[in-house]
Amino acid sequence: MVERKTYRISTLEEKHLMSMLMYLREKGPSRKTDIYDAVSTNPRMTLKVERLEAMGLISTEYNNALRSTVVTLTEEGRQVAEHLAAVDSILTSIQ
Image 1 (spheres, rainbow, N blue to C red):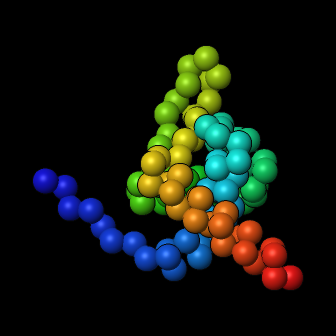
Image 2 (cartoon, helix red, strand yellow):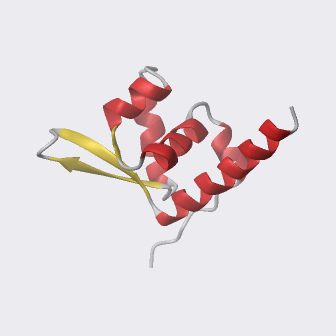
């Protein structure tokens, strides 16, 4: 049995993690390059994708037809992104 690591919301404070989840929530499964273009061209973005995948919030799969890696929210990732969108909506309404 694989032991799952426990994460707290502070884990998402790392730069760009929330933005990537929100991008995938809005756009759906996306090529890594599209995410990088929309969120950040920081060379460390690959590590951030790996971090979200290790957390179980996204999955990645190479698509031969696109010749690119496609990133998809997992069910847990979708739930987190929905909660982030709700918080974003509340914050927007109180400005």
